[in-house]
Length: 99
Image (cartoon, rainbow, N blue to C red):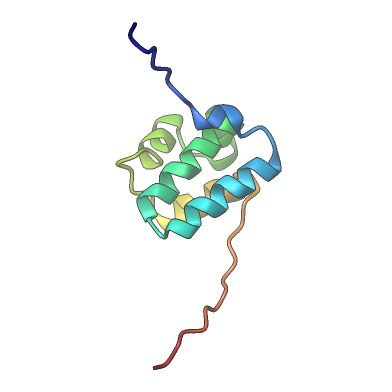
């Protein structure tokens, strides 16, 4: 008997501010800009891409393209989407060992 494979959409489980915060914190910890952009796209889909498009003045197509696996959003686009999602960034200095 063959196993049935299901498509999993992480946007479906991002139904609270806490879930979104943990999801994005994990993405930022990777340091991978492509993964971070894709994670922002997942959060935007969870919130409603049409709503985010209306709030940012960007088209849905531009948002889907910018925050896809192969997308490369500008910093300006990233910041305006993060603001619409209620997300912000903070800087934290990591003390490096000077050996």
